[in-house]
Length: 443
Image (tube, rainbow, N blue to C red):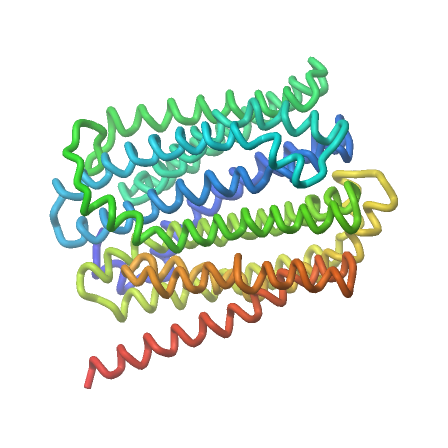
């Protein structure tokens, strides 16, 4: 990285690092959306509901993976910015090893809690059977997904974001092809969908490993000396990402519980289909966050806090514009979007009535997420954790359990926008406090 180049061409540099990451995240999200398309058209509403009931499991894996990889990448980035290449390589190796260990342990724990989770949610019949088949096959894929994501952080920091994008393109293309083979050609049902995800993720991992074994210049795989201080700093620095993703998982569990109790399987299906839009937008935001974070860490590590703030401000503008565009576009094409996944009139009506309400959250959620990434990248884990926990736990859970009691399904749709608006106030207060501290340091 070149500090002067970042300073002179900040917007261009953000886009250069972020666009490949965004494309990679969009491709990642398309795996879920394409799975939803094939499940909705070849299996039915019960299949979509079954997959959504297990989304908290996916967010559990993501929370652990992001905690380790984002925390480790931030430490490595600041070490890289300080010029210590040997130390940043050691951090990389320990981060990858920790990611593998934590994700495998998570896989074993989750497997033991399948039945208790389904019993608590009240899942029965075809929904329960589809859940156990799908996630029984998908658990190994989630381990690979977490490791791939961790490698991706360092691929971008290595200066090879285009390669990561290409690997993700191969991943998605394979997944779409194998989804079709598994459902339309071989009629394997939901097992074919899960197997397609596993096989395509495994091939992506092999391609990524080849780069780090043969072509990487800074972050090379190899032996390392375990450092407990690095582990503690990694987990502490990535704690906000853990809280953020884990909070989403808990919120999804709460959503599923409330919807199953008050509306039923059709409500879960409608919420899942609308949720694909939110997932896609969130992946774009994460792409911006992952692209900008190494730049922020590098600038901050090089004692350029003003430049780090500038990167954050420009990135926030990007996500706000994209959120506004997404809201307007989908408000115009709600019917077409709904029919893409499901032909049931009742479920389609639920989607039409809720999508615009739910997407109001886009005006706030991008800025909240990017600011959380920013605070993590400069080592201020507490501020990042407060923002993340507000978005996913304290405020959101209150909205999920309170609003539907009075407003029914409308309360479900309003929970996210109300939460993000309240969190935005908290985010703004942290930014104002940081700006005040920065201005005082100049006096």
